[in-house]
Length: 318
Image (tube, rainbow, N blue to C red; front, side, top):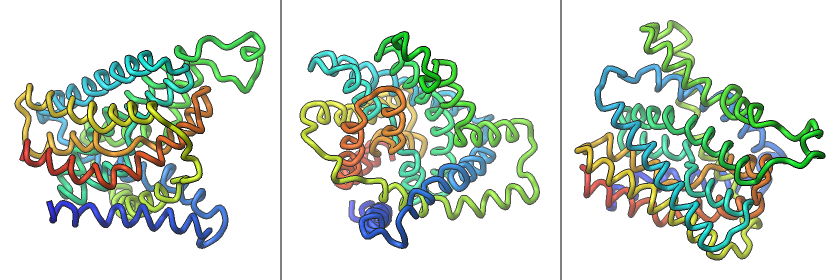
């Protein structure tokens, strides 16, 4: 447990450093929003492209790996829907609960996988991201549009109100993370990787991605967003930190998967929800203020829950 904590502590110190820099407006006002764009549009896509271009798609374990993560996604979503219905949550609150339950912070997953399990762990984490990022985006966009009902006539006539096809195209076709995954995986399957110069450049960018991403995630934490979140936060957090990883663990046990693939898969269920959930809540009519509180509180809470969860998974699967 001590060695595990020592591996995780640097990640949280970077998160705290980012939050402190944002609080002090260092080095200047608006700097961290620029860093956030840099990591989202350049550094992190380069990391995903480089890692997916290295995946061995001939490994028969990969289809089982995808099945594990997608089944966990479905189980967690069902739990969240039932929980929201039970506490009579409004549609905007329920959709924010859903995002808090099924979304995951890919940046922290990759940082943990690399810190704990090295390059092999990073490759499995990139594989999991290639499965879950498009799946979660499609699922959430469709679910939130259906949950919030059809737009009124005035909304349908408003050019600012996006249709479902436009929302899906925005979530998928124009998402740099998905584009990088498709390019890396596609070129890999065609046997065209590594690509001279381009692969080396992507590798250099990938080395800068994780520390910059963690600083940017820390800078996005907003303590002032916390209000009385009550039972909605409790249920969505149970979905994120209990139901999702437990579903992954049970699926791994059922399929007889142990070792590194199982350990990395569990990481997708023990990290906080993605900071991008706030933007989607605003765009699709979710409870954006409560979503910001969920993101902040889960990020703080996982400082305690994450080492314990990873230790338990190592006891079970290592």
